[in-house]
Image 1 (cartoon, one colour):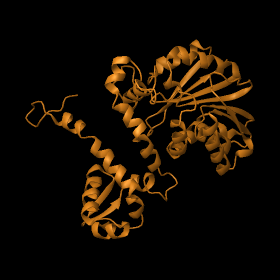
Image 2: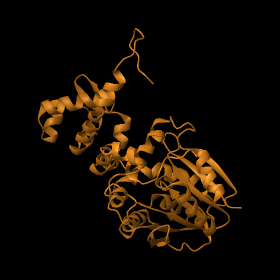
Image 3: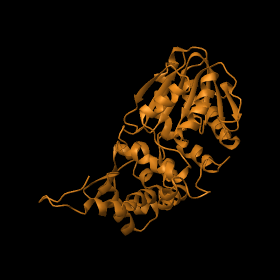
Image 4: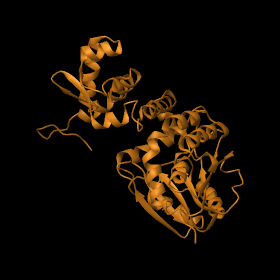
Length: 341
């Protein structure tokens, strides 16, 4: 939507704000690298005191903190800076919900570098860089992903476990496809002491998931199945199959091949659960979900952010009897739960 000036004439504000949007990410990255948020966790400080605590130049600290206040990451009152509730929860290293590593991953050279090739990806209709194609076997990208993104997925993981009714304690076999950090299967195992988890991913990634399972106290019910989800024999008899942040990497036909395999692995009445960034049917919102398609354009040959009707069609074509959509606010993602007859 075009921005207008107070007199109703077209304004270049949106263009200018977009042109310098990199400043926002750069300011947050610098603050995380300097551990500024942790330094403000206990009490408000002015720029001079904060500079002493961090061993930095007062001028640099003052300018950075003013920028963070402008962006809404800190409060400024009487020349002293303090954390907003969001910064205290998500950016303080002492917080169990800290997402600082997730931000550093999402703004990493691998991701930002691929976006510098967006023009080429648009011309080609898919990633133009071999190094950016995250679907390459055992791509190191997924090791960084597994290390960084676990805390960011804690809320959706816990919510999915509750949506599925894991707290009922039924004896479940759960297959976690492309498990990554393993937090989704782990959340079910923590809520349901009678659930066992089989996690599928590349060997190095599964080692990280096993570490997380050990830390959560569920390692005895965690089994690793290394390899490609498209090539492995899943076996059958699963009550739940998790497909979190996975389907968007592939075209619909490829997804339907996998979903038929998932369908065959489930017991009658079993459920497949997909976590996705799901845009509106016209694909112009919500902003995060709609713009996520760009990630798939620069990183994959044919992936996309799919609308709910598109996802529902894939599941139904693969033999599932029904689908349900569950938004997960304040997360930008939604859950699709598909049931086998």
